[in-house]
Image 1 (cartoon, rainbow over the protein chains, first blue to last red):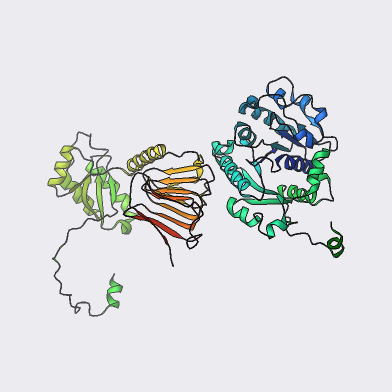
Image 2: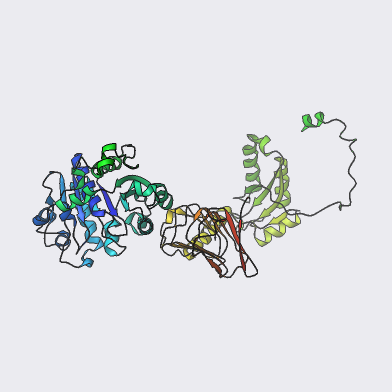
Length: 269
Length: 267
């Protein structure tokens, strides 16, 4: 049974697209046929982070409006054979995504893929609602700061009231809290909200913590999802998150400040 | 009963307490009675049926009071002989105490035979009417943005119980009654009730009780971290967080005059 997972946050710039790219890649790496869809019409970024922006011919809007079929617009990932990308349009209007049409596309993808990752735009406008409407599970990406936590709370309220599952009165969407840009050193000196604070405020299950790391920016600029970087803590954190989404019981890592060795302290970095 | 009597000696010697209370008091009470439904006015047929039926369960029904339900024979033209009927029923070791659902003539006949007349509403009918009332109450209760039909349970017609957290931007209103929350009210959320509000979790958002002007309404919460509280329009905003001595405490909020009081609970 295919699963639709929305990556959402309310607030912008917290790491939704980075998370979508890495989680989709991680699921594909473990052998699950996965597709990642960019719902951010007009501000498409996913293809950049996945490193396939020059291969976009048809996009999600073309499929919705019947100008292309799904097969034509799905872009096969250059590293993984069982990962597809459905890019957003850069030129179209945001309102081009209608709920019914999106539902039809998702139904078609459910027959061919195991996991469908929906990369939501920021905000709580129709684009974000469309991205989360058909979700079975939700990854709520949150930074350790008050405004991000507040926006995540807002989006959690929308998940439980405006999604299809809420409207049908069925089983609620499974919600996962995913904290990104976490800096244990700054948490320790009280400059950032701790994991406990965030969990206390949002009251949902923690699926993982991605520490703040330079490798995320480098990977984004290079068009390689950070999960491919096995040497970075962010890459390892995303590996753990994918494991937990698949039901593995893994201990949380990278929550304590990195211990700097004597030589490192002496000579800097 | 006999064995119990034997265990208590000198019962007869026990003195009755001398009191000023009157010798009898008339009080209302509810008992469960068996109902004997009549489907025929044929006395002989009734006797035959009763005898065969009760011979197998004689002890259970022995001297049980029964009500005769005439619903199914009230339109029959043949006259019921109540004196004869009660004799037969008594012979079967049942005590007829009254009738219900009889026609005008039947009711008169029963009264002259010394039977009480009861007004009865069948149980099915009562349940059905209650359900209709419940549905109406459900339909009229408004719920602003929250749309989770499964998590709202109606304890009474007007009390609203919510099991899921109320999140930023959501509003819940218990019209004409109390609101009970079993999960947190987060910052930026708003909960309102015409009656009292109970929160068995942190209150971080806004809570407005006595919305229709009820000055006796109160707010109770498990962990007080609110942005705003109000009772019957008298409100208090906590711009710089709640006072330190109340922060995360269990409190009740009530009105005396126009003064909004916040007291800690259980200390």
